Length: 238
Image 1 (tube, rainbow, N blue to C red):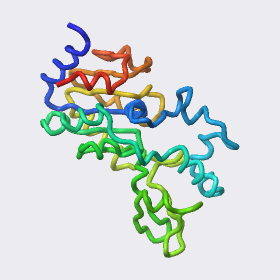
Image 2 (cartoon, helix red, strand yellow):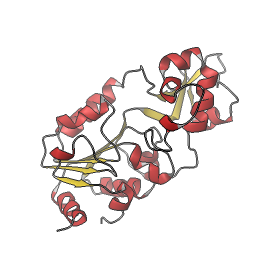
Image 3 (cartoon, one colour):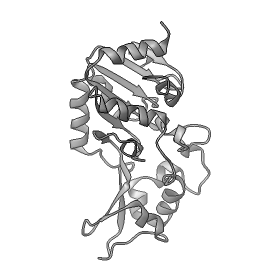
Image 4 (cartoon, rainbow, N blue to C red):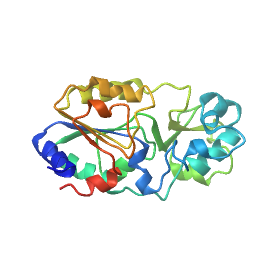
């Protein structure tokens, strides 16, 4: 039995599937990952990208933060690919109970998934640090320099920057979803970034599947490993 048929068979036999994904899920939508040759960590800026997208840099140098953020972290024309679309269909069957994502692009929601746990937030949500008023992505993109609220407060993206903690409730919901799953599919992530990568330790179900172009730290634990682009893999499933 080839790997695609084996994956399909596991899905058919499972009733409580959880998907955990990273940047590789969105690369087929034209959004670069962080660590590839063309990724954010390999771009040339006055400051290292990991410094620019830190909480302290955002506070001390908001204009440079927003210049980088708008240029390299927002992709308003990106649309869901076959991976996002397949997961939305799988959710509608009742088998997929949750999508846990490290991505901030909200493409899973755009594709139609309803139970999406965004560990690192979303570029689609922005709020005033002073009064809490909500602002959408269009407002941020249309603003020159640092977006400001009508109250005079600075508008911050609802994304988790370096030096910031993950949302406690979302993290707890992710743990609960994985603990109750009978199948966990990990896709498009090398499982390097913690604490998110540590979530898989809470899985005690029947089938652990990893779909990623390169090797991951959990390949040896998995029941099935497919080193192919996830959109191509999901595009072959029913």
